[in-house]
Amino acid sequence: MRFMAGGSTTRSWQPTAAGADTTDLHFWLQWRVAVCGLWVLCCVVAAAYLIWRHEGPRAHRRPGGAVKELGRTRRPDGVLYDDEAWRPCLRDIHPAWLLAYRLVSFFVLFSLLIVIVISDGGNIFYYYTQWTFMLVTIYFGLATALSIYGCSKFADWNAVAAATDTELGPYATHGAGTKPTADEEDDGTREIAGFWGYLLQIIYQTNAGAVMLTDCVFWFIIFPFLTVKDYSMNFLLIGMHSVNAVFLLGEASLNSLRFPWFRIAYFFLWTALYVVFQWIVHASTPIWWPYPFLDLSANLAPLWYFAVAFMQLPCYVIFRLVMNLKHNLLSKHFSGSTVVRD
Image 1: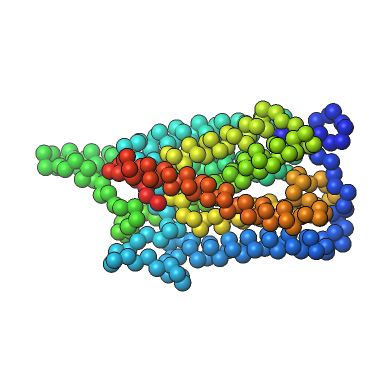
Image 2: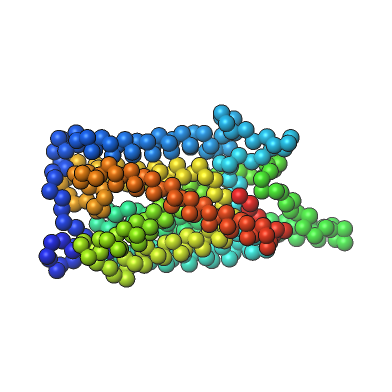
């Protein structure tokens, strides 16, 4: 991403600096700052409540978390099983295919990130876009590692099943080593995912909202309205706001990770963390704002902050609708081979 500061033709990441001194205590005592802080605090409080209410295997014991259904035990929304981190969405697809996709995605994204850092320097991490792009890259790196683990585990299962078939001989029943379990039910035999599995799930759903937010802001606000003023387009800039969504949507179409709605909380926290980071930086040094709508000195700052906070909801819902479409298509055309149903 490249920017133009004033009339200079030299490459620079800094748009025209704001006139207000953000290191002055009086700047942070303005009513606009208080209102913007209130919007951020509301997002953090809502996120904390959602996580407390729904996250983890014991969430069903909390108020409103009942999971009994006609005498059966229904899996809590926050539970993730170990194999869901590395299994494709269809049983007929070998986990190695998902591993290959994740490995290629990680290589492309990591290479692009290195090129951008070399081209424009470390200042790119001053932007929410690069924060999100880096998080997507981390996701595919972790997903690749878990897929390698899963392929190894899958091979061990096959070896055990083959040995069992050999011992039973003609009395062996095909597939006797596996017991399909409805995704909605918890029969107590499936292994719950560990720390890395849950971390993968959380990063995945954080990326879902963050990627939609960055790309929507870029294509619907920055590109049509701010390009001429402060921003100049280049191949890397356009690629960063396209490749991330393409790879993430491809991942969503292949994996068997669930998409519980309450994990929008981590998306809220991710965005709030970035805003607080910007405030800390600006309180420490008088520096330019990376996005005009983050400038607290603007009269419309409270409205801009509210608009961005509100935009998180439709951005997350868009991805959720994509996941619902995926599950509906799989249930309709591959009902007997579907691993996950949301």
